[in-house]
Image (cartoon, rainbow, N blue to C red; front, side, top):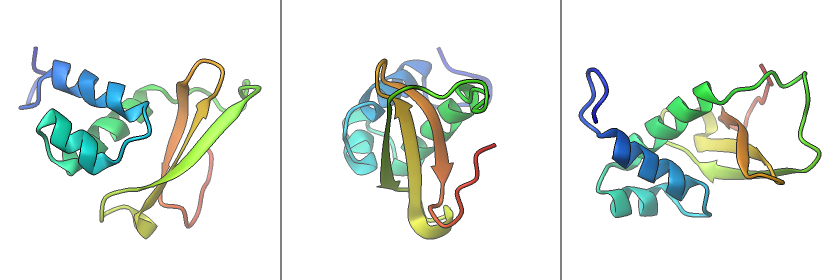
Length: 103
């Protein structure tokens, strides 16, 4: 129900990730899920670490991308997300739009 050393339930984290796939702001997702916008950003960051495929093995044929306002500790206050447009799976999320380097 709740991970070790966590206070936010796994169900709420899954709900946040469901909302992230829609074009909603962090603030709107936070208000809907009754958590802070920083919690929403941490959930996104945690999910992006788990979903990182090897970018050089195979890129999706169709890629969708967007920039969104991140939290204050992100360099440049903007983050970049790109997804496989055929199945709506997150390919990667980069913090800060100043220097984008694929790892």
